[in-house]
Image 1: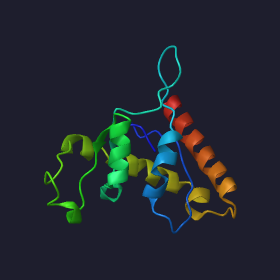
Image 2: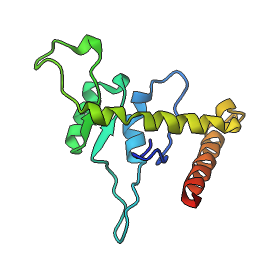
Image 3: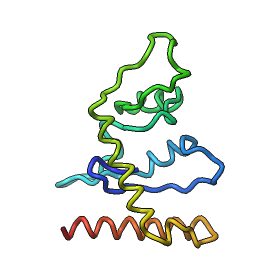
Length: 141
């Protein structure tokens, strides 16, 4: 999970055979958006951009309940349902490449890309270290 500037906010580890959408709620609950000034961090973004794999009724319902704008295109097998195609903000969706660039940067960290760790908790620790390194690089420049 990243913010609009490509800074990683949270990471969740899933089994290799599980689809990412299965851990959607866990990853959304792991997010804490820093605020400038006083007060506790926000927990929810204003909008969420995701690829077609996240175009599920369960996810769209969760986003609607939490007042988050979904920026998710529909899959081809979802067309023709009641109401036809859902409209989504294509200009916001174009900014989804920020997430892909963040994942690409994390994979440049050799230990994360190769996954030398056997246990998921150790691998998550390496991902957390890579995220801290990324945040420190951005803070310095």
